[in-house]
Length: 284
Ligand code: SF4
Image (tube, rainbow, N blue to C red; front, side, top):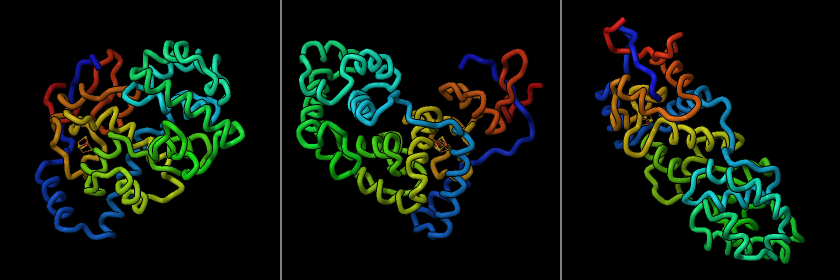
């Protein structure tokens, strides 16, 4: 974001001491009621931050989503979305992947990286769907995870977004954030999934996955989270991991919702000249 940053005076900011006290409380064993309330507030803040959150991979069928999700490993969704229109046109059904010419398939998916492994997975997926499921991608976790190229994370993406079955997608963003927030200390993705699943109503699992991943991509970055403009800050024990100064934090926010996110945090009121007003500075 290249906008100049100005500030609103007299706006209270979350502080590091409060975050440290919260971290100590969590380490000592946060009460289940306290955690439920804190998680609830964070979920509401996330929903307000990302009202249009959705699966960022383009697809029209469960099979297309399965293919796109396989391609998204070690690749951005944007790059996958650039590749898939031609891919889906060339291979509209499972039988087309099953009988694909490997060289041609590899060339089409090459921009997504690891294209040889991904081609193997797509051909294997097509063959397995044709042979075991009458050419129709199945809609249960047990069946999906037995297919080539589809692990539990991918299966949950497919279930949640293509079949309407609630699923928590524990990717690197999701795991990093829920550990930072003290929702769980688990490292294993399946254990994280179960721990968070116990904190969040099942009907919300898919959308909460989107919200958390959006937050990780746009604000709560691995190395330099934008703490100073984060709407979750007062409930986050990791506040202060990144810059707490709003002006420094504002420039770290990424994505098309940047102005909305800054305004929502109370730190970014867009002006006619494109400037962003940020709390905590004395300039008019
Ligand atoms: S950006 Fe900072 S305050 Fe916000 S959730 Fe991440 S670590 Fe916590």
